[in-house]
Image (cartoon, rainbow, N blue to C red; front, side, top):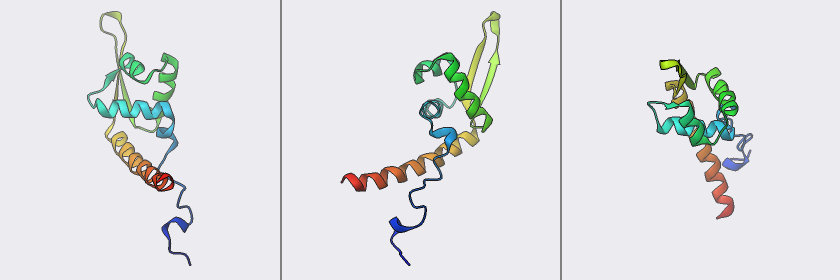
Length: 113
């Protein structure tokens, strides 16, 4: 029986890197919203993440479906406005994701050191 941590079955599976967050655009969205807990208007978020309207909508839907993000829509003076905000569940999931990502970084640093 091997006791070395690197030899454990599934050691490098990184199960905590869930697909909902791990995709590049969604990682950017989650990071932006973590840095703006009061929320961001759709166009601000679109600009920060360099996404098109369609791409941002698609990625926000994935994040809403897993309850990581919430959306509020309003139409003051006939101009539609959309506020995007991270949920408390989203904050928890993102924190767990970052812990797992740190494991990946630590494991990789050993290889290049």
